[in-house]
Image (cartoon, rainbow, N blue to C red; front, side, top):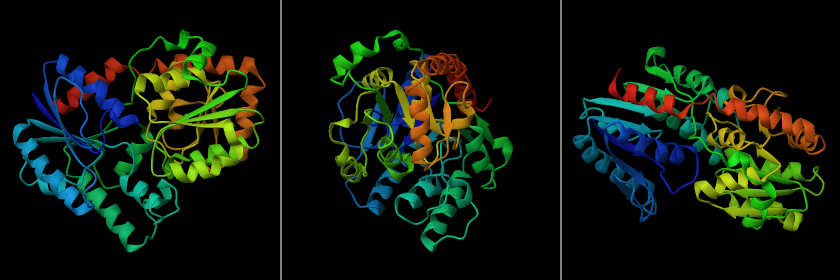
Length: 375
């Protein structure tokens, strides 16, 4: 089967969706399928074993979307099935001409993220679904829901996202929950102190790490506010995004206690996770966080916000700690609880490792293939 992949982001860009596709596509190839990818991005020399076409983001948005849609139409003519990673707008033009199967993976409400990022709403993602909104946000919400509904099947990573998608009027029978998963790793056995030396990280203080896009929805500013109540701890922020300058200004009073590590290759990002005493995820919503699964898999205890799919992975006090979103005092209290109670941290880390094993990569690949084939 020839599978055309449409995605807004792709390797080497950071984040869960690029990481997921980077591992999924070779697995599909080993099952006898041929894949091609269309994405945004600048030229990047890498032998993937399949074709990757990147269209620059430097053009104005209308021109950018038009170019992507035209290239997507060409890819559709080649494909037996289209697999769309979140970026559904081109389907408005493609669906009338492409009568074969379209499968979309939805990990969040794109229109809500855009509206939050551009100051069109301050609501959480659940309240946003039915709230009165400014005209632009209403149009975005309708466009996202309409274009997603053009898919024959929709893959979601959590019950939380399934509820959102069903709320868009999409029949439950077309919505398939396939939890995110990560390939096996033995990094949990690596010595934290050795990793810190190799990464150039301080080894004389408690170390926190957060990994993700530097955008408002990820709530890195909340982690920075919490740091004021976590004496002597350092915070490593791995990732890039439009909020970096704002976050650096916010972090300035902390001096060397905060390190902006920038975007990192996936393998190196995992080493940052293992090197830390605590993984912090202070986002305002999550579909089903890859980096949270990775933190549990490498044996780092996690403090995460009780939003989106996070409570589907973490049970508070059992395999991690849950805190409310946008609550730096609660976040700091949970971090301090782990830093001052090593036996609790060890117990949660061990349970987190066991929990991460529930998210089987082989099962994720097999179920995704079955849905692509229409089985």
